[in-house]
Amino acid sequence: MLSFEPELERLRPLLPVPTTDALIARERREVFSVQPEVRICAWAGAMLLAMAVGIVLKNNLERIGPLALAAMIGAAAIACYAFVWTRRARPSIVDDYILLLGALLVSADVAFIETQFHLFGDHWYRHFALLAILHGVTAYLYNSRTLLTLAVVAMCSWMGVQQAPFPSMNDVVETSLRLLACLALVLMWRFANRREEFHPVLEHFAFNLLVLTPFALTFDEGLRTAGCLLTLIAAGAVIYLGFRLRRESNVLYGFVYGVIAFDVLLIDLVDSDLFSLFLVVVSMIGAIAALFAIHARFQEQSA
Image 1 (cartoon, rainbow, N blue to C red):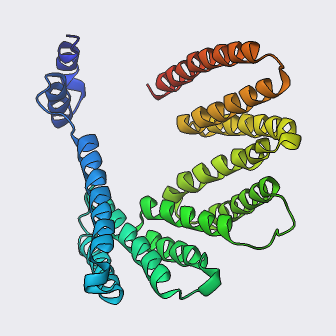
Image 2: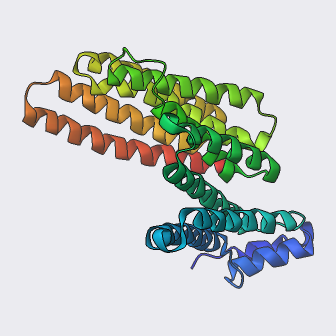
């Protein structure tokens, strides 16, 4: 097994003693990080508890009553937020997932109240706007990127299901315009935001929406070619910005979007099904090789 312990021993006079001891212990596998495992377990626990709430709602609605159930879920959500608030002076990696559980409980509670009591009437989709405001406010209160993600998703959901303002458009063009409106809102949020740690989250959504806006046009036969070409341009912009910002994830999903748009364009232009399949297979093999090359380049830069 490759070990840098001899080299670290020779560097001991040049490095602080605690740093050298920690590096040697890591080389000997005496210490190791379990942070990824803890994060996965915390996320899985939050998801399982949220699913359990759904089961409780389903099985006890008639026995307990909607008002009591809504109050119980709301109390559980408040308890999650309160617990993390009391620990804000000494936070841990688990706290963000307790916040996630609280936010999921709030989302479930708001949706449950709307389905039972119809507070918004025919404008039921407005509860997404309410959730966007709630999650957005708590994201800034707790400095949580997880809650910020939920806020942006709720905002985009609100923009995606509301009936106005494009009643005369066909479904594909209307979807593209709604995605464009979501992109505009996210960009305004990004430039108005003053929390630097929130910038990557908002930019992540902006880059995805930038590509999805023209990609929605590919579902219309008459607009497919234009949609693919615009998607390729948008994907190229995302890849360029990903390299500029040194964010591998942006480059990777921009590249994937571009490959999908390219394949859709090929299938639409080529008459032969067999030849189309061959081109798609070749493009996928090339895409996989390119993704590995991109990953290797970012690894070299980080090293």
